[in-house]
Length: 157
Image (cartoon, rainbow, N blue to C red; front, side, top):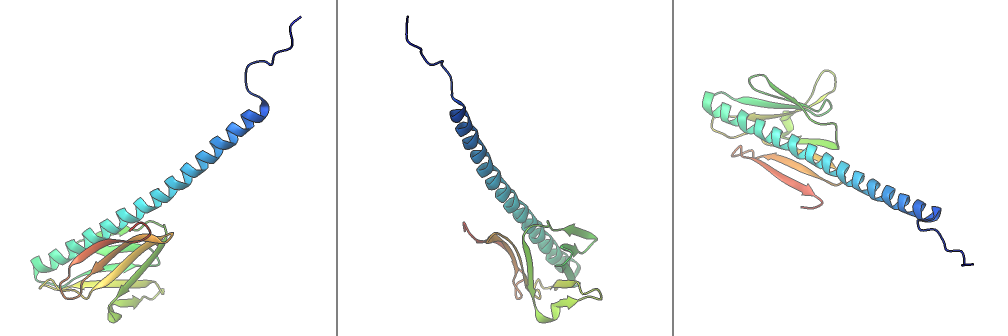
């Protein structure tokens, strides 16, 4: 009679170990993807704000009339000339710094940031920062030239 040979296959312990490794890999992938998704949302929002600021500047130059871009920090909304409006994603931290007289406190205590562009292309200036997990995007408006710049901030610069 021959000796007993183990059946080919995996033991329960080996199967549990494989399942734990798969779960860990899935968790790491989901974490990386959600961070990346948040970063993409911030980048898209910053690009949209920069485009609307450039539009507002161009309109001031074209019409010869001052134009305003208004940002409601608490509601995470922006408003540009000609009925343009938008909503910023509810991701991360939103900060606005503008000229002292251009940061307003409305009747409902909603912090408003205003960037005013003049017919010569100049502006009151301002800076919008969208950050999450130590990284994000900054949109800056030069007060003298009205130039709008978009740059990455924080990790992975």
